[in-house]
Length: 274
Image (cartoon, rainbow, N blue to C red; front, side, top):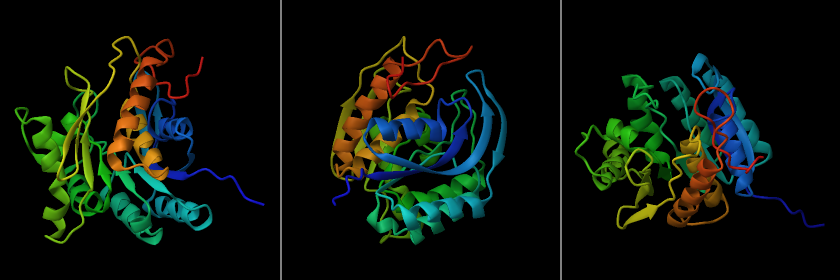
């Protein structure tokens, strides 16, 4: 009997107890794109629409064990990486990706580095580990504009294209001229006046416009975008086509966002609940 199994995707990220971002948003985006989602939780947070009240990192050993458990039994067609929290966790993820055969599964990293308030979330040691060890083995990197500035060290005057080229150069610079580096960078445009993502794969530069919903709810939009991109890679799309479809999913999730949940900014709504 033929089994009708969907593609699979693994989210390696933190948990948002309010259900708006992190692995909760990732699982909803995976389901929206027709992909079975699995998780390796890197941090437990106590948060809601008002703010983050408590954070506790999961041990690197537990993160590695979660990755290995999914890979050994179920198999992973794509990986999405979000909040990591420490250099030790990044090391555990890198080892986990090696064990699961990362060369066969595309990896999307959403470098969660800058809070909406502008606060830097990663210390220098963790950011260095991210640049030197993880970005070089990823398929697609999806920073927003503030995150791309932190990664590259470029100032506010840098264009999205300059930021994308700077992020693309990080992997090979870190590991030498023969390092694989990311296949593509998508600098998302949610922090610009016009919602335009900038895709760069080392050769072509492509603008991907999205529909902006000023009355929507955007908490978790970055997680949703990167998870949808990973899901479409799991379904066999090219990085460019996956980025185009991910922008549609993320914009629709903001437009349908749950504005009346909680007292603060509401979560995106990838599944069209309500």
